Amino acid sequence: IKCDPEKIVVIPVAIADFFKRSDKSFNKINPRILQIGTAPNKNIDRLIEALRGIDCTLVVVGKKNLLYEDKIKEYGIPFVYLSGLSNEQMREQYHQADIIVLPSTYEGFGMPILEAQAVGRPVLTSNISSMPEVAGDAACLVDPYQVHEIRAGIQKIIRDDEFRNGLVEKGFENIKRFDPEVIASAYLDLYRKIADQ
Image (tube, rainbow, N blue to C red; front, top):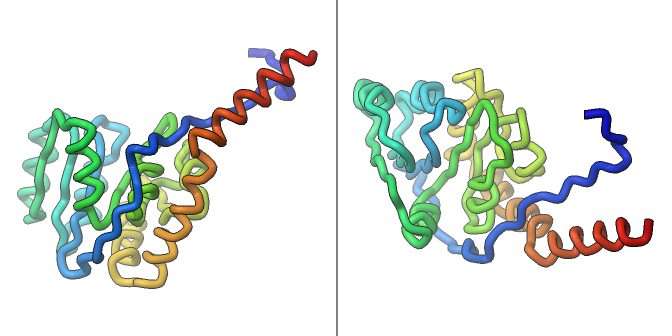
């Protein structure tokens, strides 16, 4: 767009204080894995492939897709499909989850990453698009096009207590960058800078 890069300022979205820390014992025997969204970019086909043979329950929030459902059933993965949730019901799904996954092939931002971190859940997400920037060093980053990487990442979160707990603690630090007061201050600084020009 021929805009001077020096004039571009990126200010991220603030996370709602609606999502707060909610400690939960991790279920290593049958973790509840939460996937939010069913659009093509959410990469659910590869996620299902990656979960094949892993003891878990997959919870998918979004528009029902019979092709996904058939594949989940074929692989014998226990699952729950949910849609039309209120904010309170959505928050409760974060609370019940053991792992939040967002192995998308594209995200404009990736708010579930921050919401999961705010609640205190380990996150697996993609190493492309906006997701690494949003997640910081507080998520297990994988190549979303490689089923074996998604699978290995989920297994590491399940099996490695130190790694998993580290992601959670780093998540609490990461969300501080997206605190509403921090974001408001960034806007105020930008407005002052513009006004002074």
